[in-house]
Length: 421
Image (cartoon, rainbow, N blue to C red; front, side):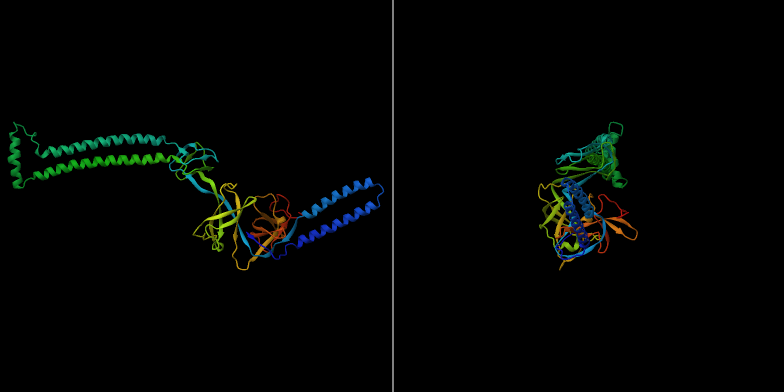
């Protein structure tokens, strides 16, 4: 939108003709009244007649002033400021999503509820996960017992190797002694066997059993830690102090991973978020103060963030403006920011009478007329500032010069309405 200081324009011609007609009709009524009073004998009757004439003339004047008519959109020269639509957003906002599948069993409150950091926002049923946790505990206990047994077998092999066991031979120990001190050394000398390698093999076998038991314990604990993470994900907590801005689920709803649950925001400080045309971004600096209009009141806002990348489709850059602390506004409200227009020498803008705007709507709209088909269509506009005459207003986008629109449309009119139909 553009806040201009106009120096011309042709859009007021029809309005002037209408005002001239109303003035001529008013003079005619006054002349009739004076003539009637001069010829009247009973002043009381003249007084009653005067009241009726004044009432009917007032209705006629109102009708003439508010009669719908087709006018042509015109342009005017302007150089001043650009007004852009924006939205009030929280200082911080996050969308809470489900991390695991399950059923919602509790919510932190209704929309608008204030919560502190760490308070529970959403809780999902974790009964099945707790059952799996008990199963894992039994697996961990079994794996730890197997580990202790493997460690004992390894220590036994170190202290009392099986390769030198003499309890396997009968007969007062003499055959075993002969085996140990004569037969085995002879076998080693002849290359038939290697007692040291046999001992090494037995030790490695026992050590492998210990490593496998340790792996089973670690695997069981890893599964437990993974399950504990899933159990933790059943509870979503507030990452900061704020309020519940909207809820997407209710207690009892089944959810899936990635499904949005609610929006949570910090609204102690509020911001304006606007899509600024890339040609205007060069005149903006972080920390700059600009005028803004929120609702029906004017205020100032400070530029807090300018995105470094422009939208490749719309060729706009997101800019955020900080409002004053405690300013009476709510997230989602429509607002306007006034930005300096650096266009050299100004530019031509579209202006229309304010009376052409359809009354009662939340957004500025007009009826665009198709004279050939005798029908109209609604058109959403982005408005600029009121002109110096107090009756016209600038249009940033939505209309072109030469288009036909309806002036003074009835309240609540829709597409298809045509004057005189």
